[in-house]
Length: 148
Image 1: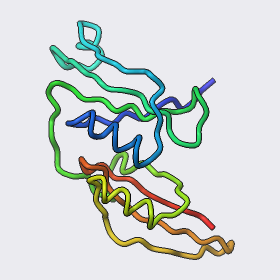
Image 2 (image 1 turned 90 degrees about the horizontal axis):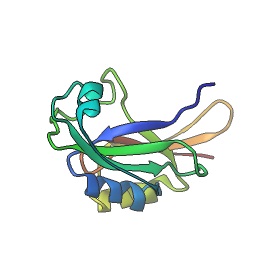
Image 3 (image 1 turned 90 degrees about the vertical axis):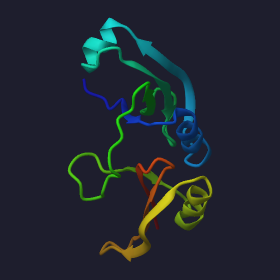
Image 4 (image 1 turned 180 degrees about the horizontal axis):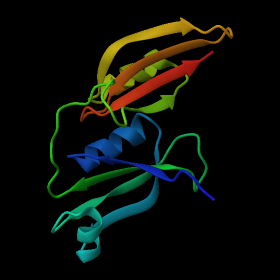
């Protein structure tokens, strides 16, 4: 058996990012908070003296036991330049929303940003995609999409 479990997001301010994903993107706490340190964490991460902490949020649209967004911080978070959509590796996390324009306004009102333009395109099967790339308050890329 294989089953998708979670995606981990390392952030500088755990509380701000947890609140953003809960309040803006309808992720829900499942009560799985973590405050981890010790030799097993050092061995697992390869980081001497590692201390990580955070919480798992159930992704919207899933029942209990579904995949989570694991938002963690470390005592020492290494900063890097903002990611680009065409940079190798994981680029963004996507959310289906009822109204892309409305959700983008909410993202912006809660400290997020926008990348590029909000666009609408019609696919050959007749469906219309409304989509925009945005960021959370720490610059992690989010895709907001709606299909009609």
